[in-house]
Image (cartoon, rainbow, N blue to C red; front, top):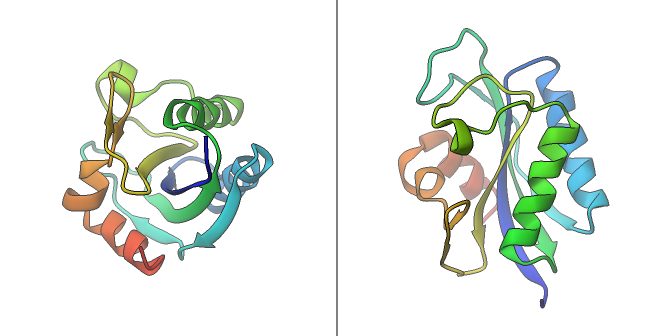
Length: 139
């Protein structure tokens, strides 16, 4: 696959949240992706579930040669390697998590299957914190 530019949103609300995000960004880079830009850290309340643990979120833009499903697989492996136990898509509900990495967009691609929908409509249109971080990337 040719080089693609993707926007990812990362979040953590357990443990050392900034360190968790920095570790995930490094692992994304180690997976063969090139980090182009990174937003500021943003602390906010959990969305769509209740928790006393606030989230730290960032958006990053990357260059990747991975297909959408290959990229998703690599990101899920990073989440698992960092200790993420359950996936909200599989469980049907949100919970506290060490790391969450979502693919928001890949170029102007529209892609949909059971495990992945691009663009990620909630991050682009419904979640104010996501839009703020993505806009900071200049995307």
